[in-house]
Length: 101
Image (cartoon, one colour):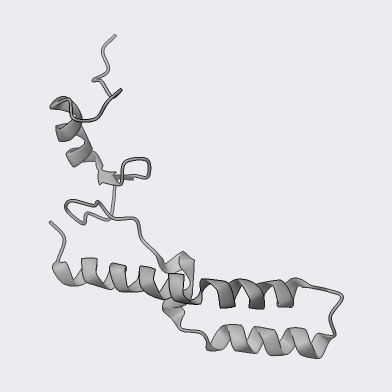
């Protein structure tokens, strides 16, 4: 089980990313538009740098929904590998079976 502070920090980051996503996308589009004057693109880049660090989606970390484990998380299920295995062996995930050959 991960520390509760780390789980809460990640939740806070996800909220910040969601809050600034529209503004961030608009500023990025402005900086990449070569038809605009250089000054306007430069100002958009400066405004982009003034956004909070945690507004960047790159800083997000996938964590297990049950334990908060940061590594070995399957995107499709949102669970860490060990919890996924436990739940799959109990038969609670439809269509997932243990491999045997």
